[in-house]
Length: 351
Image 1 (cartoon, helix red, strand yellow):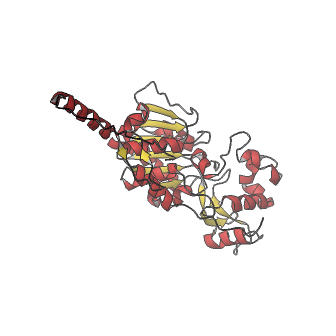
Image 2 (cartoon, one colour):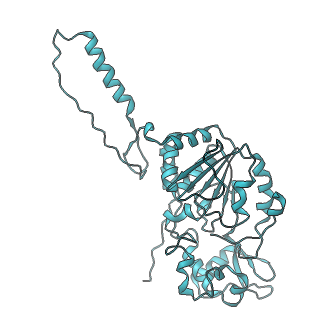
Image 3 (tube, helix red, strand yellow):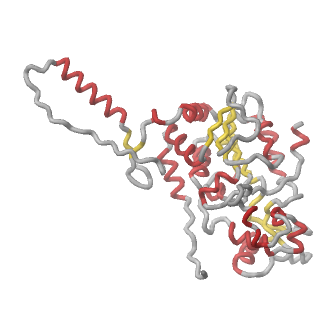
């Protein structure tokens, strides 16, 4: 039923590497003429073995010492081996990959975005992404936009940087992101290999006549004034091109997904509850020979690690990205990439 699902509309769901201090003790030893060459060779071999285990590293953020490869969990190594042999990796990212950037996910009780929207007096949390509600009451979404607008204070995470490295190493087929925070774009994932399924803030349009509106002008109006961006043609309200409830996903999503699910040789699913169709169904769309990896805090979807096809890595996405980078020999590159894409927050003049 692939073609049927691909026409749905959807909502916009939205190292601290441990430092091992390795001290090599040097003990002075008096070599007497009685010491056999066999004993001496044994000592030399032992020292050589110790030295071979030490991998020194100059990390972008300091002179940390790299942990030995044999401390990386077996499952991570297996995924690393899959990455080494893959040439068309498809990635599906959700709000979980942005939590360490300081952006709340949507659905976590207590800390999720939906639980923290009460201040806007919404009839229900999802109303903030409802076109009819925006037409009547645009202020809540405009206020949220000031908080979330990409490039102001939130920076790409190590997970975003890891995806960017997959592109640099010619392994990334496409990153399908469910997020509207723009961090994939800021992480320098190439535009042609990035598909922001639920839209982004860089362009805008009128909600009534759909006439495109200058993205920079929309940004300036929302961030620097209390006015509502308005269409010069019909007078309707303008909003950034974020996919609201009831709106269709970008045409590019449907066009590319049909091709990508056939081409992909590895699927990495990161930081998502897989609750919003059709993006949530991507793991079921990829062909049977495509390996699948879930990197998430909890099990979701139809992943089954009792099969040879699936691996489930439960835990923090950034930690997993660091371990994979270490195994692939990309650790320094990961930190450098992340450092180069840090957003320097503008100093606020207001309290």
